[in-house]
Image (cartoon, rainbow, N blue to C red):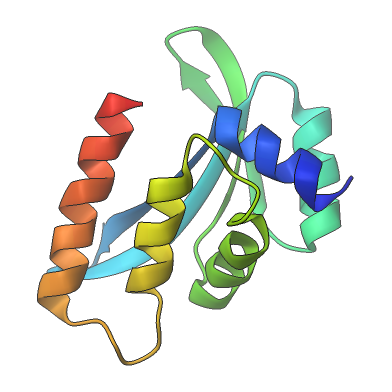
Length: 123
């Protein structure tokens, strides 16, 4: 496992976004990678040293999802893959802007949340 492989895998199978946490004005960063085969997700989790792996039902059958929510983990992961991603570069850049310490207001976070949702629909 290496960062180039992981960035490419994330580009194809991953998602970065914000989820509402507690109140409508609070957001939590989130990275998810969904895959039909759990082995590769276990290898990624072992490489990263963090993440939760669970089984999920999808429109295509059973899949497995690796996800993590802690700001420091999300930021560290995204900083390492940022120069390597192609498809999800805009989403990674937006999330890193949101995760900058003390530079983000609730309105900027809300705008990023809206943009990330739009980009998820676009692909």
